[in-house]
Image (cartoon, rainbow, N blue to C red; front, side, top):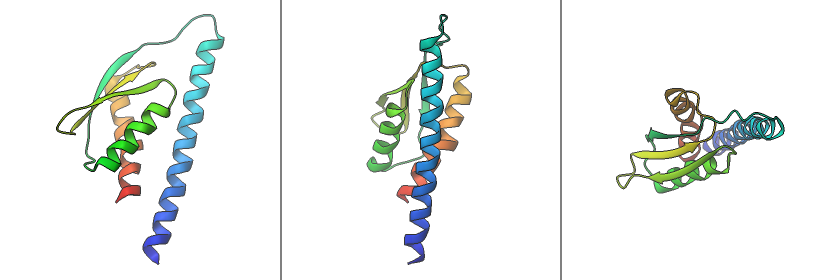
Length: 112
């Protein structure tokens, strides 16, 4: 019973986290569209993956792709790296860390 309650709390926390990330990404994209100058700095980032299962990888890839301004391009054949196209890439290392400590960590918690 305790396991189920912990999972429910993790899923609710994850949904809140992702909803906030989705709102932020939409606002950035809307601002860029509505202003006369574009602030895009597109780039491709390689993200090393700690998650292993197909379900975890599929969840992470879909969540990244559903977030405006980012698109999952490919997962390496050994499933150890994910390639993501980002529209607003200021710092590849910072984006990589944001995905690893944010989405990937929470996806791993929900699926474990």
